[in-house]
Structure formats: C-alpha cells, structure tokens
Length: 414
Image (cartoon, rainbow, N blue to C red):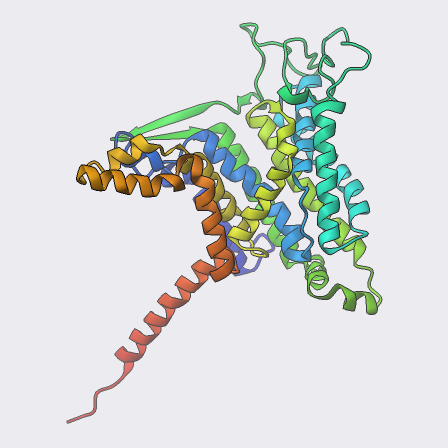
C-alpha cells in the first residue's frame, strides 16, 4: 500500500490519525477547569507542531542518515519565508505558488551552501554551516534591508528586500498582479487556498469542551503527512541505504570507488527544501518574514528536536518538535499565581515552599526543564523518546509472554 511495507503503512496511518484528531487529543481538559492550562488544541500552536515537525523531518534526513550535523539549517527557513512573502506581494495570496517558490529557492540556496560546506566533514562542516547561516541573518537584518536607490513607486522596496528588523510584511501598495490587491472592505488580503482562507476556523462545543478546527492547521497537517510519507520512501530507498553507508563508514565507501559527496549533497539539498517548505508554511499561516527565523538559536532548536525525539527514526523528530513547542508555549505560561491556585489546598507555609521549588522550572525557566530533559534523554535514552516508547512496549510484551507461558503450563494428573 502506497509503495510501503506493512509496518510503515501502519506508522503512517497512526500519524495521520493523530494529526487529524489533534483538536480532540490536545484538548483533554474542560475549558473552565484548573487543568485547562495544559490544553494545546488551539490553531496557532497546532500549526507550529506540524510546521516544525516538517522542519525536523527534513533535518533528520541529513543528520539521521548521513551523520552530517548542520548548525545553519534555520537559513533555509528564512529563505523559504521570504520567498513565500514576495510571491504574496507580487503575484497573489494563493499558498500553493508561494510554497512552490519557497521550496525551489531554499533548494537552490542549499545547493550553494552544501557544495561549499561538504568539502569538509565533522565539526568543520558544522562550523561552516553555522557561518553561512549567520551571514544570511546579517544580510536579512541589515544589508538587504537597505534600499540604496530610494523607494520605488509602489513602495515595495522602502525597507529593501527583507524589511530589516521589522520583517517583510504585506502592504496595500503591493501589486499582486494575479490576485486581488485589496479586499472588499479595503483591507489586505490573507493567504488562501483557492479562496479558502488559512485563518478561517470553526468551533465545536461539546459540554464543557470547545474544539477548534482551523483550515490553516489542516492544510499544514496534510502537507506534513505528505512530507512524512516522502521521508519514509527516502529512508527505505537505495538512496537512503547509500546515506546510511556514508554515516557508517565514509572512508570505506571512498576506498571501494564510490564518491559519497553527490549523495551527501543531495541529502543536504532535500533537507534544505524541507526547511524551506516549513518557512513557506510559516509565512502562509502568519504573513510575516523576519530575520530572527535565521538566527543560530533556531538552528540549534531543530537539533534539540531531532535528538530529543530520536535521531535516525521516522517519527522521532516529529515527537521532539511537539515536545519542545508544547513546553515553549504551554509550560512557559505557568506563573506563580497559577501554581498557588493548584496548591491552595496545602497549608500556607507548605504551599509557598512547593511553589518556590517548582517555579524555577516553569514560566521563564522552562528552558531549565528542557535542558534537564535533554540531559536525561542523552544519558539514559540515546535513541530519544522513540527508544523510550520501544522499551515500554518490550516490557509489556515480556509480561504478556510470561503470562502466556503460565497459562499454557499443564497441571499433572492426580
């Protein structure tokens, strides 16, 4: 089915089911309950889950299969975002052409960077990619944000090609030659898919629960499922086997007469195209492209996602992206007032003590919790969250096997 083995089809269907049912799964608590703080089923966050999942899937094709650790992959997200924004500004608000241009431009940019960076390996490759990313950030932040000849008639280049620190934004002066320049009420059009606006949403009220179904989220989710399916095909293909050989022993491949560089470059370009697709989706969901998306911390974030979920696994990077984005958006909002409301049943002195002990790990200190979690995963679960799930599954299988042996043992006749 779909050209995949039975095990891979099962994995794809599980991911599809979890993705489609996310508004229900991520809203387990009633709206008015004290635990509603942990609900994550609102459109903006769900979109971040799947978009950064695409980013991590692409990064895993490079890092998980070839072993090349890039510290500059955020540059491709930025290129994809800027490409999509210029498509919106010049031609129209349909997201498909914008995503196509984002993928193409990021792929060409990755080809250029990869051709230079892959002449080195190990830490030297990582430093080269980091340097290229920081140069891209500097270009977007200042160099390309300056209009040397003054603004043009439409005002398209008042802040250069990238908009500088304020980012590239849509304006009423944008021509949009293949789409409407303004809405009926004189406003700026929003990204859409053949008329279906990405920001449109429908709510379903079921008792004390409210579930939101967003067009933008489901479009992004379908794109992620396609990207996930393609990653499975890459992992199981002869090309994927060649990439694993590069990671296993690149020197031995060279001695056998195989030139590994074209394969590594192809993986780098594919990975960059995935990142560009994620950047284009970011611009499609929120029409803004800023240089902060290209900063080195964004590149480090995808490394954490991949390692936390499981390097070289199929679903691991998606899980890692979900965990980090959940902590960034949910755990970071827990303040002292919320903690006091949770532990109000305790005596005053004990309540203050518990809150004082927990507070450094939530709110602004959520990075500390993430760091501790990352350390524990690296030390005790080198295979990431996927390895943790596999260990739990093996434990249950052993228990079932023992119970089966006991039940099949026959009692001696009296």
